[in-house]
Image (tube, rainbow, N blue to C red; front, side):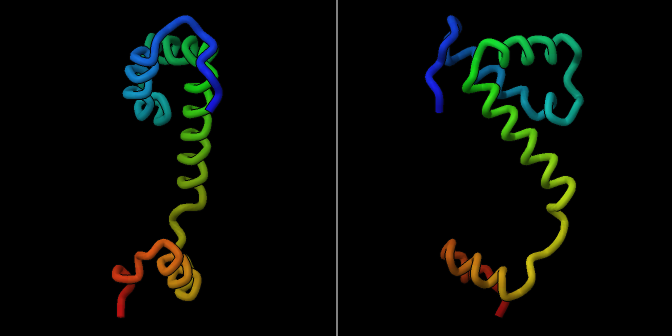
Amino acid sequence: MAEHTHDHNHESCRALLESLSLYIDGEAEEALCREIEQHMADCENCRIVINTLDKTVRLYREYGHSRLPGEARERLYAALDLSEYLPE
């Protein structure tokens, strides 16, 4: 990740990241949205995290509900060493 190039500390980043779910889901109050957006304008690390999470959530909502074909699932579970979770 990029270096912090702003004048606030890691604790302000941590506090902001705790509110991300509300922000990403569009459920955060307006004041919190402004605070997060101002923070992102000043903090490249948080901007990257938030943008990546937002894209991941959007992709999951659009495409994440389909099941992997059996053979692909088996290969994935084997590669991740999760074969014990495959049905026999």
